[in-house]
Length: 309
Image (cartoon, rainbow, N blue to C red; front, side):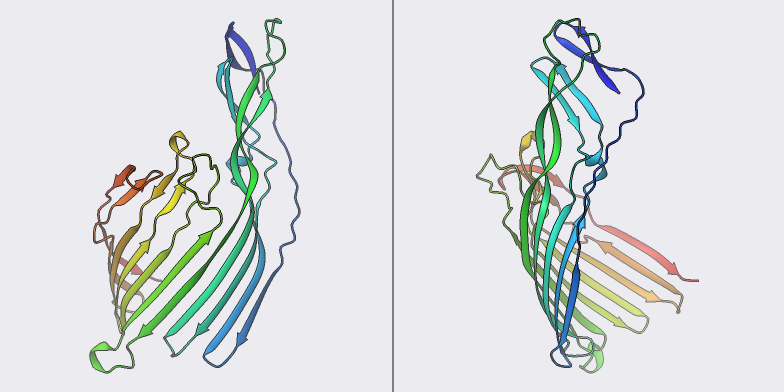
């Protein structure tokens, strides 16, 4: 347990005043229903609807009842604390999809999703007084610290569409047998995006960005090969980073390849390449010309052998 003692007339020093177990409980009850509907419109066309309520607990580090003393000079007293009273994230979810299986290995899909999420964590500050072990009546009352912690204070809506497709060339004769392509895209939107022109905004959802993937593959006999192109649009990584400013990750493209050969039913040798086009990761501030980081990891190659027993 930490108390405060005087190091000087204008400075406090945290001291260990003894061992004491610190514990706090928090109880909550949520009803989390979930239901799914499937409709076979035709032999090839399928519709699905899913409704659910889900819950995700806060990170354990944010729940800790421990308080850590920071600055200890009067007029600049600060501390950091966890918040055991945090409630979990709760979301009402809707998913609607339409799937067309036009061949044994080909399909087209389209989906819409919506999530209404409550209890997002937001950094906040509250005033707390701490006792002084040897006050000597030098000051009136216990010192008041500005304690930084997180609290449930925001809600947001996220919605978007998902598209997917796959086509194989097995119906074509000769050379094209075994070749195919697959692609998917996710476009997402939210009412909690960061307005870069508003420097007073303190809450925004991180990680929101459209993604696109396209894969060309070959799979026939003992041979498999795939070339994948992946793209992610610019997204917010941190709403309040260094100096309270946001950090964005710029749009990013990456090409990965993999080739494998089945030696027999139990062994496979493969060669894999990640980021073979040597793309770079770029992080930006509030505006795209404010470069915070340019990271080059280079391509990575792996040669391996897998076996099952």
